[in-house]
Image 1 (cartoon, helix red, strand yellow):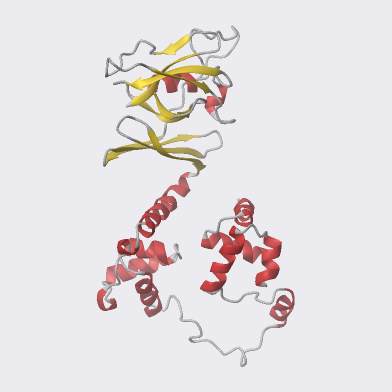
Image 2 (cartoon, helix red, strand yellow):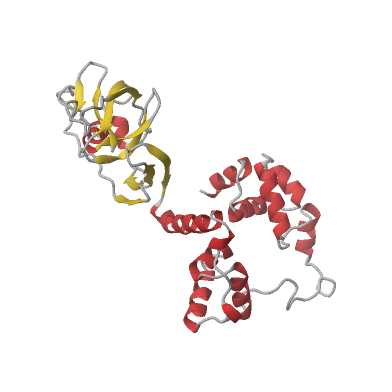
Length: 321
């Protein structure tokens, strides 16, 4: 695997394993520059190498790769060895970097609290999570080829409560994006085992996304809808309802509808599609509120529910924190 196995700091000192042999003696070490800029607020920000422009050596070695990918100034993305990762992430530095005599003894380098990896079809998938000072997890997923070249990467901060929903979301996305053939067929005749039916009722109280439920139960969205309707957990539009003409709106609701014409009415699939499209076009929440006849709070809630993308959705997520 191609890894960064040594670096030279701004004082000219080498760190890591600069004499490490390459697996192919005919190969020459790769050389590049790396401006080390760790994320502020993380333990790595206290590294004595933070802000330095380092010269790095990389190549195919038998040294164990660490969890972090580094972007070189000269191009290319590579994992570093555990030795290099420890040196860069540690606030204690190395023997070549003097520390003040009155400085308190440094704490240990925080180890990842989540590590998982596997290889499939010649590609290596590595997921690591390191707990931040604010309690969140910094997750990094890297996908590399047989020689260690980075072919894909995801990185971000989440809470531990986000992990299970994210896993379900990624699973549903993978099934959706691979094409219609990956979506399971409806249950034959609509037959549900009593245990599955009861479990669906329990899950529906926590998860209202029919796509995710369909993936979990191995059926179509329509089968989920029909079973929930059979259990009386949802109602078909217009069923068991008093017609609007025979049930007048309350005075409070009439006042709301004077301001927002569609206040407290059901969103149709077409309205949700249009809302997502307008949000993606950059239309902000106040304009969306006027366009769809609903309060800004209702717009924010619907943007979050349908997973819309755009400035208005980003603002809604910030408001929900």
